Structures are given as C-alpha cells and as structure tokens.
Image (cartoon, rainbow, N blue to C red):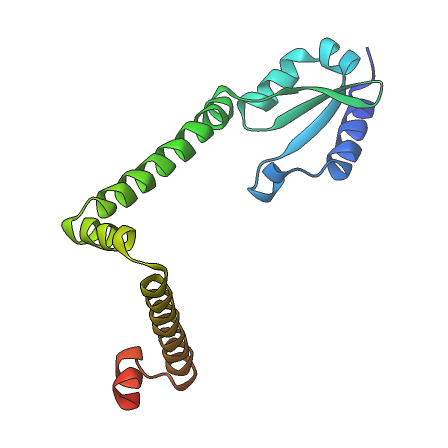
Length: 153
C-alpha cells in the first residue's frame, strides 16, 4: 500500500490539472490510479458520498468515475427535464396555432396567389423593421417604445 501522504500529493496534483464543469459549480474533483482506488476504496467512497467526484485512472487515462447517488440521479434526470421543457413549448405553440384567428390566417395564406404572398411578406418585413428601429431608439433615449412609435406616426 502506498504512503497516505504520497497518495494525497498525487491526488492534489491531478485535481489541479483536471478541470471539469463540476468545479465551476463548486464541486471538487480528485483523481486516483486504479491501484490506489482498490487499496483505499473506503476513503474514496466517503469522498464521493460527500460530493467529491472521484476520477479513477488506469495507465494515465481516465477509466471510471465514482459519484454520490444524488449526483447520479441529477445527471440521470437532466435529459428528461429538457424533454419535458421542449414538450411544454411545443404544446404551447401548437395551442396558439389552433386558435380561430390562426386558422383563418393559414387558410388565407393557402388561398393566396404569388402576388398576394409577396405583398404580405413585404408588409411583415416593414412592420418588423419599424418595431426594431423603435426598440433601438427607445433603448438609446430611455423612452418607452410606445411613445417613440407615436411620435413617428
């Protein structure tokens, strides 16, 4: 078994070299060789339980990670949370598209000829440009967008 102090020096040195996303959130990360992990598993387990990410290397290459069950569950639930958010956004968008006004607009768009579609596109572009200029002018002067638009009219 290696000297405890020597293992700490190796771990401390590798912790400084191995920077991860978890350190940005305040979590710590230490690294041990596979032999050290085998010989000192109890200590590594305690570190993981207390929130430290334990990286286990073999032949100087990362091979495994030991983390707490809480951290594991958080990582495992992340994709589902993202999917739930996307599902909610899709449902909201679909609901807006199902309103009577949206249905009339789509029916009119499908009935329109090329000339009518062109005019509608130009009108929408102008409307966005005016809104964009109004927002920029309002931000520069500190005035509200509504008062800026009213002055131009």
